[in-house]
Image (cartoon, rainbow, N blue to C red; front, side):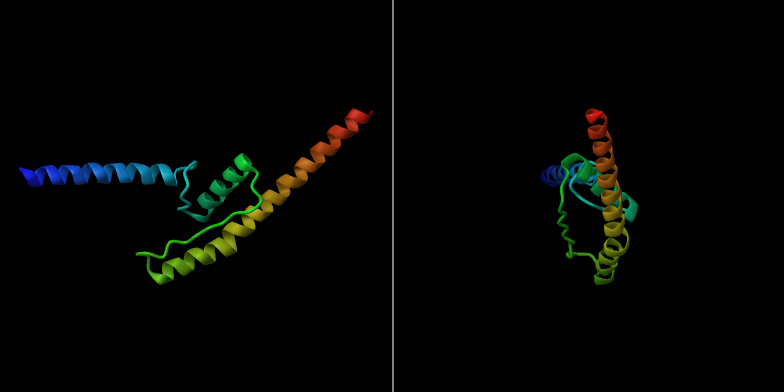
Length: 108
């Protein structure tokens, strides 16, 4: 009987951990996992919400094989970062043009 209680407690903890992980990896969660496009979308959402100018990322190197970690770093540098920079720059230019148009219409 005692073993079943321990197993049930462990399963409950696993479900709680799994639920937390799923929340963290969701669009509004703190963990960046998924395809390069999913990571891009999540970073841009955070930028839209917080208007952050810097982004710090840490790659977990625990149980993941070295080759996969290196591939993640490569994808971040070659696909994610350039796409985020381009989108942020484009949005910044659009916002500046919109502000100039507004200030021009106020002066008229």
